[in-house]
Amino acid sequence: MSKPQPCQAEACDLQSCLSKYTYEPQKCDRSLRKLYECCQRMYDSKNEMGTESTSLESTACPMEIVVKRWLKDNPGRGKI
Image (tube, rainbow, N blue to C red; front, side, top):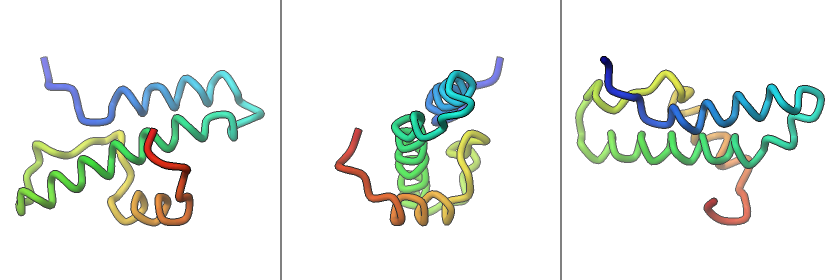
């Protein structure tokens, strides 16, 4: 059995929310923020390790530059 990937739970929560609110995706903003903040923590940890370690990768996360840009463009009201 494979090890769960980082941020998988947040990605599943977002997918569930989007399925529930098909015509109102803005209701899923909180879930999206939680996923992107999780992804940023994963990338920060990976960068601190100073390695190209594949142990800190996740198919649940977009590329690091996308995460950084989205968080910069959508500065929330603090951490969730």
